[in-house]
Image (cartoon, rainbow, N blue to C red; front, side, top):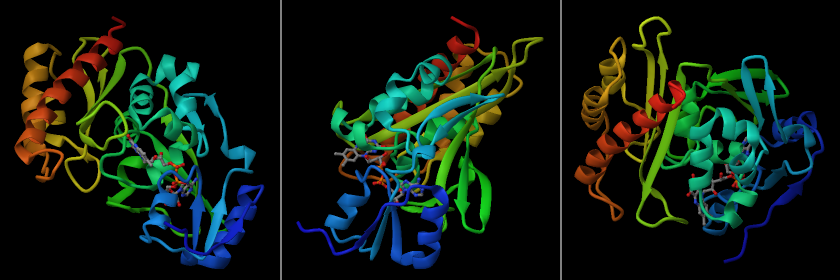
Length: 292
Ligand SMILES: Cc1cc2nc3c(=O)[nH]c(=O)nc-3n(C[C@H](O)[C@H](O)[C@H](O)COP(=O)(O)OP(=O)(O)OC[C@H]3O[C@@H](n4cnc5c(N)ncnc54)[C@H](O)[C@@H]3O)c2cc1C
């Protein structure tokens, strides 16, 4: 399959990238690792007249802890997330998502912004990032805005991102003592497969009585965008964590999702697995929150 014709732009700064995007508007597409976009070009799903490649913009690459946030550059690759010491120490659920994504070949090219920008309902990084309460920074020649990742996804392939914007950073609040998160994905095969179900859970415990102060549960592959399990979250808040409570939350999460039947799995199977993964990710989150 041949690629469609396009003009290739290689800006060296975010300002320059934004100028090019402002000039061409919807006729341009940002290119990061290309593991999603190039497939769509080859399949003729997309045919932008201009590609704006980010690979020469050094400021988009890196990770740093700034006060109470971990700031990850849009070009940081999935492979880098899997081995980064800061991610390993503080964002274990994100690391689990990165390790589950694709194959070594794909992880070496794929970027965090590309995984978010492609807006696939089964993507591996958004559930844990939403569960941690992450925001994304979107920059254009008109200025900069910060959007909670939980409000970013509009449908498969559709997001809050405007054609003239670059996703420059993902900002993740640093979990402190008494907070923890877990992520588990389930596919038909171990690698190179689209998830059947993927779930991330985050909890924060009240330091006085150990009850659950905040809970965020995010389910992937069971709706057009990553979905919050609001019934499960409500069942957890104010309660003392234990096995029975996490089983109850898993049951509530099953009611919170609306999966479809497809060749990867029946809706009833997906619902059942949402319950199982919610319980298991809550177990991981609780172990982290209590330092065990
Ligand atoms: C064989 C194979 C296996 C895969 N397995 C998985 C998997 O297991 N889990 C999973 O989640 N995904 C998987 N993917 C999908 C893909 O690899 C990931 O979504 C990847 O993270 C995309 O990142 P990228 O940098 O390659 O994005 P690109 O393909 O470069 O871009 C994807 C989209 O995001 C936009 N974009 C990228 N960066 C920015 C930015 N900084 N600002 C604004 N817009 C931007 C692009 O315009 C495009 O619309 C797989 C893909 C392949 C080919």
